[in-house]
Image 1 (cartoon, rainbow, N blue to C red):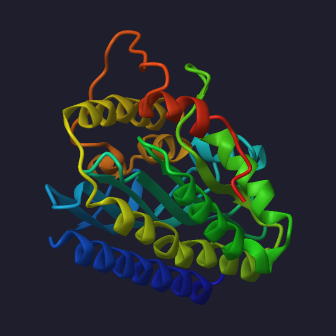
Image 2 (image 1 turned 180 degrees about the horizontal axis):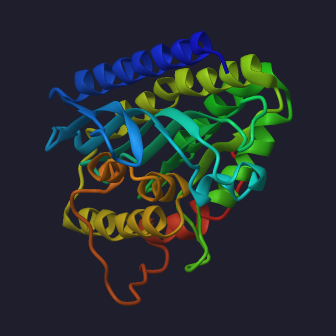
Length: 306
């Protein structure tokens, strides 16, 4: 990867972060706080980033969108499990990652990430670059039209890069965002890809940008439809309970979280995905036939939404 290629990707990611936070702030009525950071000399990870965070908003209880561009002397284990030949290789990584936790339980939580990593093999050789990312939706109360819209937008974004990409990345997303310890999907999925280099640098970067550009089209119409719906304490308590699944996945299974923590990343920015309030209860079961039960029976099981 050349210096100019890295700069083009960096400029795109910073612009994407700004476009998304502007759009979310306009819907919410509250601005994001911008927190620029720089790793101190001598730390294992070098680089900088910008964390944008909105807390206590009108629509979003917590919305975090972070950009980071870092380099390190040795790829952490979470990044080399599929590339053992790069163990110990110096690397460069950049990306935008976001998680938005809405206030209204009828608005789903959403996650999106687009990233690029490059590494130089130990002992010399040509640098290797690969891409990852995707987006996924985690509703508390399911609406079929929302699920169909989200998945269709993902499918259309990937269509120019091959008819195989959406079904393949949709299945990959279902496999990845799965809580193995509960035998349960985190949400209704979306698309996910990682360690992707088969289209070369230009093709991989174009596909990654297409996913990033599709995010607002996929999510904002859902927010607009649901943010004004009335809800009560029952819905709020179920939302807080289901947020517990989000925390469990991110801390136990998520490779991105593990990569950031293992490589010496900035903890506050890595954990911006955490919801502000959450609860757990022992063996809680929804009432049969209730809207809460429908989440488990009609939405969490894997489905072909398009």
